[in-house]
Amino acid sequence: KQEVTQIPAALSVPEGENLVLNCSFTDSAIYNLQWFRQDPGKGLTSLLLIQSSQREQTSGRLNASLDKSSGRSTLYIAASQPGDSATYLCAVTGNQFYFGTGTSLTVIP
Amino acid sequence: SQTIHQWPATLVQPVGSPLSLECTVEGTSNPNLYWYRQAAGRGLQLLFYSVGIGQISSEVPQNLSASRPQDRQFILSSKKLLLSDSGFYLCALQGGHLAKNIQYFGAGTRLSVL
Image (cartoon, rainbow over all chains, first blue to last red; front, top):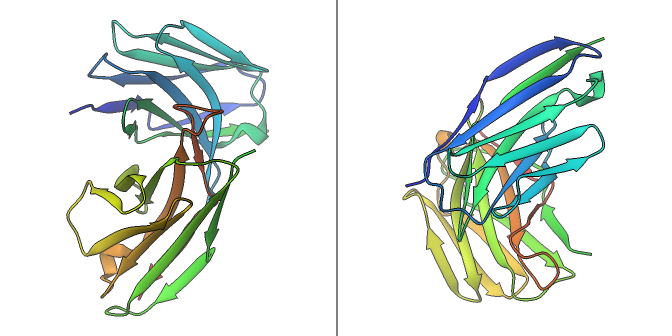
């Protein structure tokens, strides 16, 4: 069964720093990988989707990479802002979705 | 565009009471539909998924059940709630002709069982 792990579980950085969130998965037979953001008490917002044939995707200050062979993905956030504070989840997808436990990010003004 | 409606947004129920959470989707046809739960301090857990009307697969055995009476309607139910059923319940859809393999989420229902 697919297992998805996210490291670190929590991260606190000062505003303006660049940061990297990590996601690893055990089964490389995936269709795609998706990064989500969850604000406290709210639903999920999809940030980036990387197809299995792609290496990376970019949206604004966010860049996600995928190394399927090693079972890893990273989410890079440039010039972090307090509004980036949230929990970030990665999910690998096939016929089902497998979520990681998330990284709780706090950006300190 | 695809839209997911969940209600209610928050719910407080006593232990042993029944539960019915409804999810309806718009802007797509024949989607895969999912119910997830996030318990406090834990990651998302897939509860049920459905690939079509009347087709339900359960991922975790528990006192919850799901039904899909219509293509765009997915219902999560319980006959008797437990304290451990407290959490944040999310409905999601996958697919449709415009966004295969992208999953969209509703705003969720926060359930407190007291």
